[in-house]
Length: 174
Image 1 (cartoon, one colour):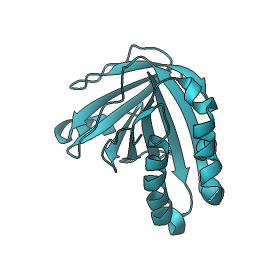
Image 2 (image 1 turned 180 degrees about the vertical axis):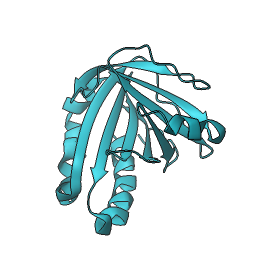
Image 3 (image 1 turned 90 degrees about the vertical axis):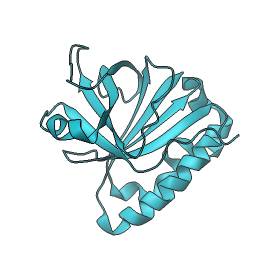
Image 4 (image 1 turned 90 degrees about the horizontal axis):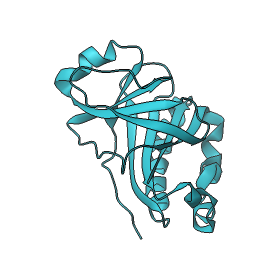
């Protein structure tokens, strides 16, 4: 399995509600494509852009070359209307975990980008992923989940981004 992460910084507050509604529907569109297994959206608690992240589990990178993916508007063709508001749009593929974790409403997704796999965070079990495709903005990304009690301390670490879920994890719709 491959983890596909899409990160956005959205620069048009007047469009943001409409974009979030559209993206919630687009999550379902992608999950109807054979090869997409899970999908969930997140918003960073604070920090520099990008503020939004969608995390998908896909069978393999081959899904992005498939006709069903392209016909579903994958690769950004569905989001053309909102492109002027994309201050940041990065797409990364990662290997190293069987499936993206389902982050519940009372949990947070913790993300660490690093050039090594030597970062440790007290109270968070990190899973290290190797960057394997698309923009490859970091060689390694660690992800884990945290509860509210750990979040304040994690937010003080500049190498950590803490995200709250804005959708539940969804599964394939095919």
